[in-house]
Image 1: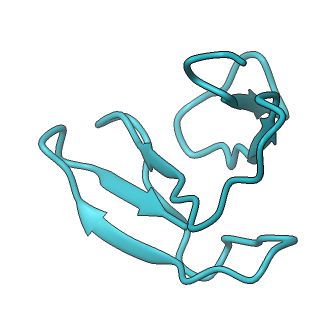
Image 2: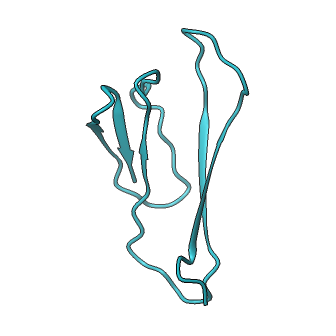
Image 3: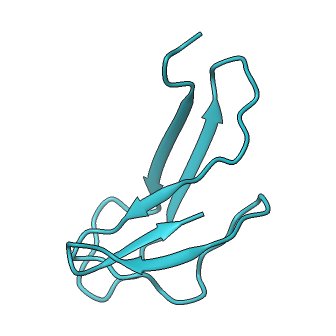
Length: 79
């Protein structure tokens, strides 16, 4: 079994953006370890060049979503 069975992939809907553009990021995770994993937490720390659009987070799983400031002057998103 892999030491780190959880794989996380982050993708953007565009490759280049200009100031003011809205970019949609998708975070997808999968368990490649062969054992059940429970109580998974996924965090995404945005760079200082990005800001979270209030109310735009979606999840296809039941999740508690939180937003907190980070050291880069932006936001940490957590599911």
